[in-house]
Every structure is written in structure tokens, then in C-alpha cells.
Image (cartoon, rainbow, N blue to C red; front, top):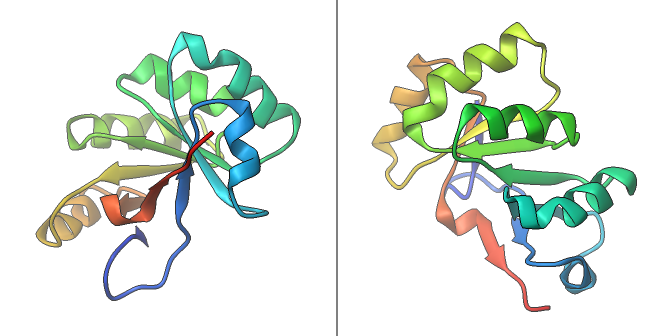
Length: 130
């Protein structure tokens, strides 16, 4: 199980971007973070075409499938979607890893029992300015 932002484990950080220009304010080879929205399709195409590593924050299963088709490295979602999303990812052999957003360490065990690829704490997400 992958752990991002946990106080015991050194891990990559995710750099939230609001537009293509904000990519230049992130470290080289950073994992970028974007919230799925139709108005962000230009950014998703840019990330895909430039083969950048990125995470997409999704709110439903349809957005999960879109994220995989944009070649996302990670897909972030809520606990309520976790098991269903993980099952779909395994059925269709997604390359993207499923990450569940959590707030407390005791949620790690629950996600492990569900077979989720990983969890992410808010400390792993850095907001950038454009």
C-alpha cells in the first residue's frame, strides 16, 4: 500500500496546478495534481501529451474512467468511492493507482482491508501560484 504525506514515511509531494502556466512553478519531475473538471480539459491534454506524471482528483466513476484515459499516474477520490473504484481499476487493468484521501492514521487499516492501492494525507498536497 502506498502512503503519501504520512509523518513516518518520506514520500513524494503532489503539486496542485490551476492552469498550464503554473506547471513552471513546480519542481522538475514533480507529480502534478489537478481536479477533474470539463474546464480543465486543456490541462489534461497538455499533461498527457507531455507525458507528465499527474494525479487527478475525481468525484465519480465516470471521471475515474476519464482520468485513466488521460494517462493519469494516480487517481484521488473519497472513501465512499474507494472500493468500487479499486474494483473497476482491477477489472480494466488501469495503469493509474487509486489513492484515497484520508485525514487520520486509523483510516489506513480500513483502506488496506479494502485492497486500495494507497492513501494520501493533505500534507502531501502543495498548492502552487500561477
